[in-house]
Image (cartoon, rainbow, N blue to C red; front, top):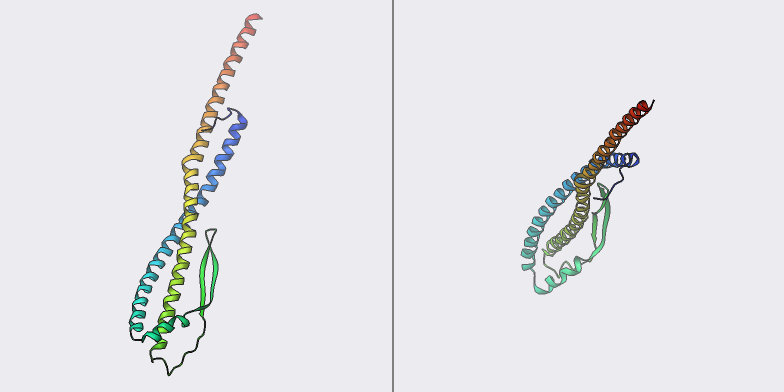
Length: 200
């Protein structure tokens, strides 16, 4: 703990600091709570989407097994991304990326050369691609929120466990010192008065 001056000016400074810390702490605590709720929401969404992706991959594998080698090799041509739009959403002062839309390049295929279920395979493959991109976006959201949550938690702890108790202790120390000084001054004044009376 830094050494403080035992003066009325320092007492005023410490009181103002305590007031400022006490006013700022509830805002930080609210931000921490909002970030925790958002982190839980993202985690739930991530787990649900991961389960969907697993199911989609199983479906895709079943469809691909119905294709011959040449048709299966051509699937990659139909899942090329033309445009992936993202945006930004503000959560408790943190900008997090959000998924907006996804468009695939429109490749035409010969309906007579490919099997009837070729479109089903393309749709399943596109669904898997979109789910993977959505998971990637959720991962980025989670990282942004968790980083901010760590910083906010550190600030809350700093205010709760260090700054506010330190300011209170400084105020108490200065008040005791000033009180002692006042008592000593009164004592000296009485002694001086008595000496003055004795001389008279």
